[in-house]
Length: 470
Ligand SMILES: *[C@@H]1O[C@H](CO)[C@@H](O)[C@H](O)[C@H]1NC(C)=O
Ligand SMILES: *[C@@H]1O[C@H](CO)[C@@H](O)[C@H](O)[C@H]1NC(C)=O
Ligand SMILES: *[C@@H]1O[C@H](CO)[C@@H](O)[C@H](O)[C@H]1NC(C)=O
Ligand SMILES: *[C@@H]1O[C@H](CO)[C@@H](O)[C@H](O)[C@H]1NC(C)=O
Image 1: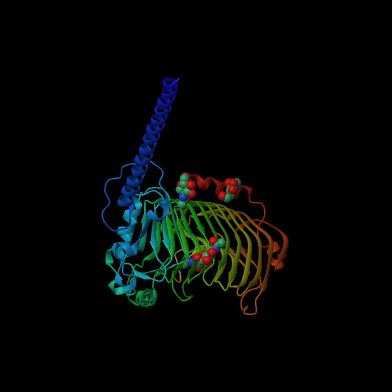
Image 2: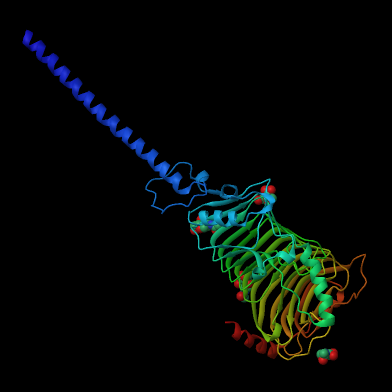
């Protein structure tokens, strides 16, 4: 009886021991894995922290990490920028860029309430995907044209070979172009008397050979020359930006595209001393919409074919645009003597207010008083002007196509243009060598007989010209 009871007591104690041992093993394991996670987190911090030290080699991170957002921010202030608008912060910006470039999903931060003086810089890729430049403060270009490094007169901030990249933020990129603008007047006067060649001027932001780029929300102001330029690039989105410089700033295009494909520019305000959007040679599949444009020279394709060059521009849609007090509205301009083709272009739903020349094709474009007459032209085929309405100050429609090869398939649909109070020019639509059709409500009524109809042979000749483009 006694031995039976002591046996069950022993058995009970044995069970207790087993339970205790199991529990301790589990808890030791748990503690081990917590330590491991802590270590990993620490290593990640050392790798990515924005402390300005050179980061070591990048071991692949084995576990998903908590709160990656803070750790992927590269603030220019942490890289030695002063942010006082006077000290040169270029090196800090480049260092922050280089740090962020090697981390996927990283952000270079230009913080609010600071001004950063930046000399001409190259921010180069390729970088890891999803890099962002967050501009909440202000980037200032050197204010003095004479001290600008002569080796980089082409642009101020140059993004090169960048992919899958975004610029955003509530900040401002200020090209401080005042000195440059007045110097161009000086050069212009010099040119007419002693043939001095005008000096080069820098574009504010240039993307060269870059793909899948978004630029949104920021302001770009007072560029010495063009404000935002893309060349040899593809897959561009521009959204909700503001570009401005004074009306009397020469050659300060808003957005300038060259050899660039698959572009959408939308919901932005652009007012400068030149074209709001300028589409140059080698561009295709460009969609520009919901833009407030003015002051400036409107939205234009060209000048194309300068010095007998080849120009190819295709598949362009410009729509839902408001233009106020611009020199031109919807415009295509080519130099005499060029080669190539402009085709499949639509200008649609364009509202104009006090625009000098709302609709223009000029195949005699010339930056001097007289240019030599030349045979050969960049051929223009398939251009629709649709729902263009509002007021003009000089002349409602001016289509001057080449003597060598006329424009074909030019369509004018639903055009309603009235002279503005400032009107002091022609009320007639003027068309030269333009084939196409007009329909819908047309005002002034002279539009109706402006275009020539037919021209089957000419169309075939025109079409043969896109061979140089493809
Ligand atoms: C970068 O690529 C990723 C994956 O393709 C995509 O989700 C992201 O939107 C891209 N980022 C930009 C800025 O285009
Ligand atoms: C447009 O940009 C401004 C200025 O950065 C910002 O405040 C606003 O939220 C943006 N709007 C949209 C719809 O993204
Ligand atoms: C004209 O261009 C538009 C916009 O890029 C495109 O969707 C359309 O297919 C083109 N039409 C022709 C006939 O190529
Ligand atoms: C060019 O041709 C036009 C029209 O044929 C003519 O009026 C003009 O005087 C010519 N210009 C020059 C510079 O030869």
